[in-house]
Image (cartoon, rainbow, N blue to C red):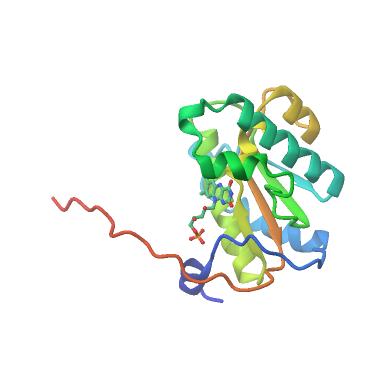
Length: 185
Ligand SMILES: Cc1cc2nc3c(=O)[nH]c(=O)nc-3n(C[C@H](O)[C@H](O)[C@H](O)COP(=O)(O)O)c2cc1C
C-alpha cells in the first residue's frame, strides 16, 4: 500500500475478529514506530505489548472506574457517564493486543516524540491490513503508580499512547474532516 492510501484509509477500528496477532507482526509495527523523528534524536520511547486478556480486562475496568471517580461531574456528559458505567463496555473493544508507547522521561519532548511514533505504528498497521485505535480512555489510569506497575514500567516513565491492534471485522466507513483553518501570509 502506498503512503497516500494508508494515510487516507486508516480508521479508528473498534470491532475485531478473534484472530491473534503474532509477535513478529507486532515487532514490525514497532520497527516502523521507531522510524519517527524525535527531538535531539533522543528516541525516548518504550513499548509495552499487552496480550494477557486478564490484564486488558483489568486495565479497562480500572480506567473506567477512575474516570467516573475523578472527572468533574460537569465535564462528564450523560452519554459518557452511561458508557463508562456500563459493565459491558470494554475500553479496548476486546482487541487481542494493546501496545502502550511510553516516554522514558517527563521532559518537554517525550510526549510529542511518542505521539509521532504512534502515528507511524498506526499507519504501518494499516499497511499490514491490521486495525488500530488510540485509546485515550486508558491514559488516566495508566499514568498512575498502579497503572505503571501493572505495565511493568519504571515510575519515571510516562505512558503516552495506548493503541489497540487487531484484525478488523469490517472496514470502518470514512470519517469526514472539517475544513482546515489555514492562515496564508
Ligand atoms: C489522542 C486520542 C485519543 C483517543 N481516544 C479514544 C478512546 O478512548 N476511545 C475510542 O474509541 N477512540 C478514541 N480515539 C479515536 C478517535 O475517536 C478517532 O481517531 C476519531 O474519531 C477520528 O476517526 P478516524 O481515526 O477513523 O479518522 C482517540 C484518538 C486520539 C488521537
